[in-house]
Image 1 (cartoon, helix red, strand yellow):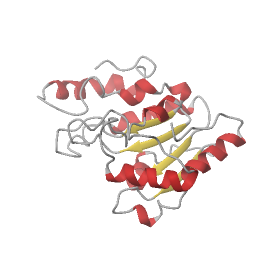
Image 2 (tube, rainbow, N blue to C red; image 1 turned 30 degrees about the vertical axis):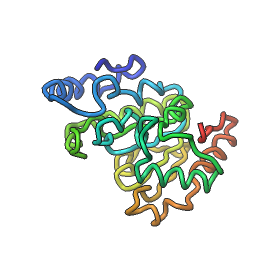
Image 3 (tube, rainbow, N blue to C red; image 1 turned 30 degrees about the horizontal axis):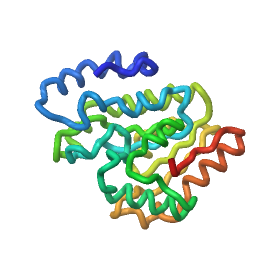
Image 4 (spheres, one colour; image 1 turned 90 degrees about the horizontal axis):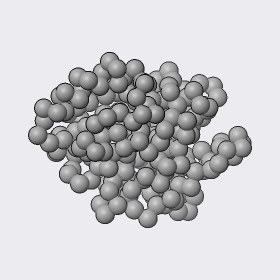
Length: 212
């Protein structure tokens, strides 16, 4: 569970990570497990981040979480929120990834980071108070050093987690969460993916292939 080298200097890893690591090492089982806990940071170093999408915590069903927010292992059926994300994608740009594995987004500079990076099997939110959220704020602040970011903030949790971080040069798209409970309150029809690519095009930057 070594922090990724590109992010290891963040304050979180000096002040908060040692205690969280010790707690995790005392558990018999937790998700997504040591090999995937920092998958989002491994996939997207700070200088490559262009888009920030924050989730809450990993899927609590064994075999589902792959360390990226909203993403699942390729063979897993789409969870309800991700199914709604793909429905909005198809309505917005006419395409979506072939599976629920969003690592193709991460490789293009979309930081898919949960605000809590661990969860016990079947017990969503149990580790949310451990101090993981400091890592999300540290990571966003580090990525901002390398240029403007697009924040795709789905729901009150993500909006609260990034409060005060977006700058005038950043793009902020804040809508309801894609959960079935709230998707019809402003998520559907928001067309965030085309809006982000329009913003990137205006800056002369490479567009995100959201179907990858």
